[in-house]
Length: 274
Picture 1 (cartoon, rainbow, N blue to C red):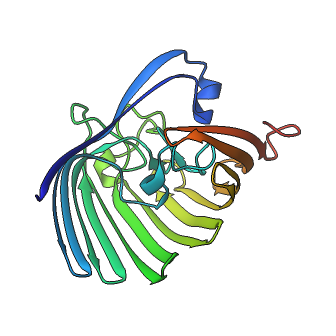
Picture 2 (cartoon, rainbow, N blue to C red):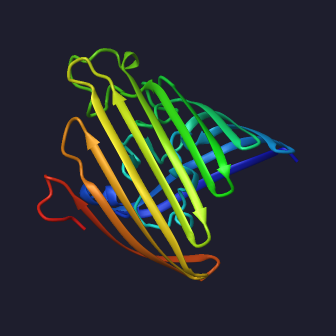
Picture 3 (cartoon, rainbow, N blue to C red):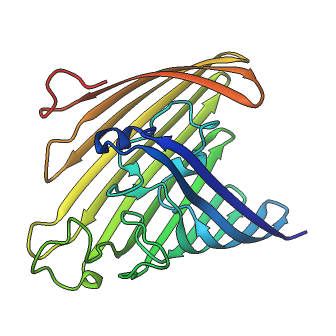
């Protein structure tokens, strides 16, 4: 009645995700995104969930719909990714408590590594990170939320751990974010703003800000159109803006076909990169 075991295994050919295209890797990759034991209780306008195992990070809001059947576009928003992004889509080992109190939702999480640098439980340099978030549903279909995390983010084999740097556990990384969700009739809108600070002693701290707005319009029970504008700014290099446009078609309730066109634009890109 109260216990469950949940898991998500992702298998895909490489390259498939946009961030894999420049790497030139080929083959088949398997990732265990989630595998956790859950205890849940529900009361009138209240709920409590306790999870332990392999978890998605509680930072941000996109991972709540990180599923190709839920994401209306093909790509994912800026600073979400597997490695060397502010918020990993990989699973992290840890424990989490979620609760709702009427229109308020709360979540707290402790994981073995930072959302910006996922580490296996068999890896060295695991220092732990705390993540929390809260949201308020103003009315049905309209919610605003905040989230944040803090914890050591580097490891000694990280390409961004430079010679002469101090002990990684003394270099915290942190992130804060705000998210908004709105839906009415055929329209759905999602947006996020996030800011990251990665501390160093040998080089200046790395600062990064990202934001996106995503709009989806249902045209027919089987058809929809969607667009996403993403903006990324960093203290180390000119980061690109991204413009995504997609249409989706559902042949049946088990399949979704999506066609997307994406443009990346920055001072480092000659013309546009599709």
